[in-house]
Length: 351
Image (tube, rainbow, N blue to C red):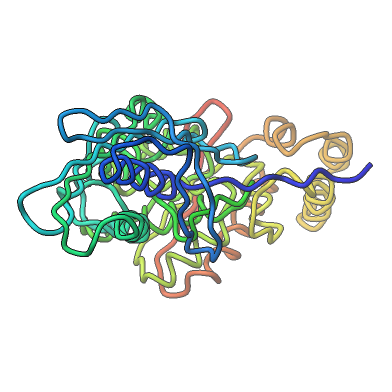
C-alpha cells in the first residue's frame, strides 16, 4: 500500500498577510473579493478565501481561516481577522488585537512590548499591503484571533514571555507536515530567552514529568527550564553553539537508556536493540544469573528499572554512559543528569 503524501499548509504569518490584503482590497475598492493572492517567501503564490467581509465607517474587515495542512498544529482552523483603516499619518501601524500575543521578555526576534509578529510575517504583511496601496500611505492594521489566548495555553508562549495570545510566525510561509523545524525553532528561542534573562543554568527535560521533578529538585527561575522532548542531540548542540555554561538534563530511565545508547533523538524506535545493549552491560558489570534472566525477560526499559531500582549497578552504568555521551556534545560546560523515577521524583543525580 502506497504511503500517503502529507499535505502542506500555511503559517499564521501567511494567513495574516492574506487577511490584510483582503481588507486592503475592500478598503480601496469598496467591493468584496472572493479571495486574496499573496506571494510566499517559499517562492510561489497562493490564494486564500476571504470570509466575513464588512466595510463601514471607513473600516474594512475580513478574516482568513488557517489551514495548517496535515501538520498537527494548534493554529489549524484559527480565524485570522484583519481590520484596516486609513490614517492621517504616513506609513503602516500594526496593532495587536484580541488573541495576538505581546512580547514581555528579551531574547526574541521582536522587542519587548511589541506584538508577537516575527520579522518575516511583518515583511509579508507590508508587501501584501504595498501591492494595494502606494508606499507611505497612512494605514492602521489591527490583527486578531478570537480564540488565540485559549489556543496559546497549549503552546510554550507564556514560558517564552509571549502573553495574551498566539504569535505570527513563519520564515517560508509554509508549514511542512510533521516537520521538526517548529519544535527546534522553539528550542532555539527558549535558550535565547533564558540567556537574555541572565540565566547561567539550563534544565533540559524530556517530558512534563521530568520537568516537574527537576523544578522540585532545583531552585531556579521558570525561564531556566527548557522542554526539549526527544531532541536531545539538537538541544545539546544548540547549547554548545550558544555557550551555555551549566546544563542539567532531566529524564526517566527509558530516555536515559536511549541517550546512553547514542541515539540523538530519544524516540521509541530501537527499543529492542536498547534492551540488548542493556543486557550486554549487565553481563559486563557481573550481574548474577537471576538479574540477567530478568533482563532477558523484560519487555521495556521501565520494567528493568522497576525490577532493579535506582541503586542497582546497572542503572548506575546507564547513568554514567549517558553522562559521558552528553558531555562529549557540550565540551566545556558543566553537565549533570537527573534520573527521575516513575513516581515523578529525582531518584539520583549523575555528574
